[in-house]
Length: 69
Image (cartoon, rainbow, N blue to C red; front, side, top):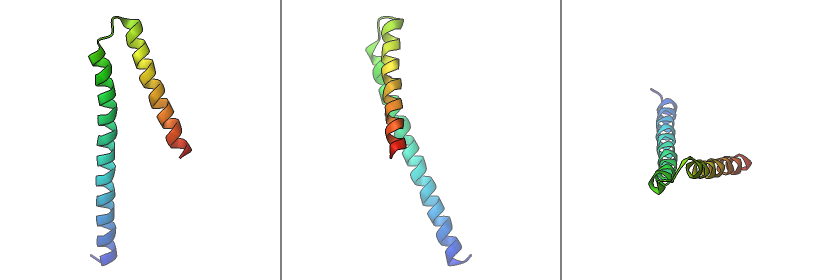
């Protein structure tokens, strides 16, 4: 294999590894947020819906912020 091909293969491997690590970080972050809601043990559907709505709004705001970039 040529040096360029080897370089590109290694670059792609590193990129895919970074992408996986980032995806794991993102999923862990949102799982922590959901676990906090679960730990609250809301006293009914209304309070649970409120907590889920807050989380959804937080996620929407984060997406909007990232898109502005």
